[in-house]
Image 1: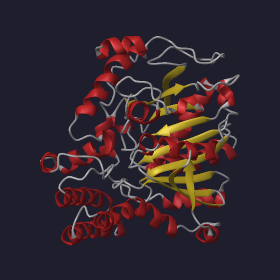
Image 2: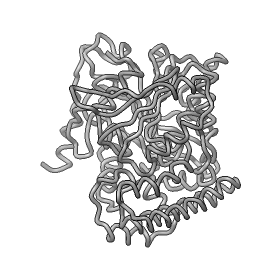
Image 3: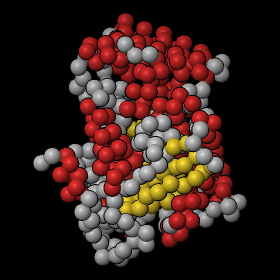
Image 4: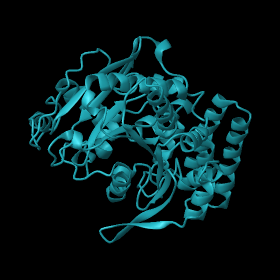
Length: 446
């Protein structure tokens, strides 16, 4: 059956539950949905796509609301996170068995403005700092709750991936303070950081020893990668953030040369080796960064499939008429944040743990390279927070799901760290069993 016929078939509304959502519409694919734009600033329009849960409950408000924020910056939650990781349909149009929508309401936000379907009217409206991103997201929530007031009392949980590990903590902090100031009503409960870019330099410094220990590079390769990583660290220590970002890209190129083209998102993913490498090394540093961080797939096949899906059947089904095509502003969104890219957000996580009641978690796939688990372990060890001693003294315990060891967990106070087995950067897609354990701990669904 052709993709077009599959797409038309999937437009058929399927009512899984015995309730009707207040603002539910027939969108793309199964189940009740809603979507739209929130003007977070004059000239800045943020898009969301809400899936009402298909859980067997008397009302959808009986289940929590989970936000998903993609990384990049500039990658699309409504596209990549939805169709490649945790939404009800896969990119190929098949039903996803492990979709989060079966257990909770899920809202995908194209963030920052300029990502996915989100757009700005002029270049001056792009965000350039993490704080601006966070404040935009708080404004978004005000607009979202105005459209969906029934969710104000529903437990809210923020989950993210990659660069989202910088955006989500500051969003969580600003949302918490806005609630405290009575600027917004929200039953905000937790934030979960997936394979996070929270301390960029810790991630970069983990590359050389991680690859050496796996046998992906030899000692010579390790030393070359480490030398380039140390140059990146020098710029970070000097506060030369744009230079640090460019040197990060150079370090990435050294990794690709010395590893003969390892996949940054899962070191066990088959690549085309030197053919993959030659393609990347022909790109400018800016293009190489963008393709790695926002478009993910160097051979462009899946990127092209996703772009055709989002600009074709999805745009038609959701009646998107802005005149700005999905993803058209993503590159500019990324470039505007190059000066902020290497700045850490560890201090924001510390403030969440020391001054708020928000539950905070970090989950990391053991096969991820770009945000390698050892880097996360290092910045967590350096954090200063009220329950640090208890955390250090607490032994890890196994995560067992249906008799299978899916990873490990350590919890103290409001913080938990999850080591996830058989997963790379995209934990929801790579190990949905472990992800379900993490979701249940934070959302207590069902």
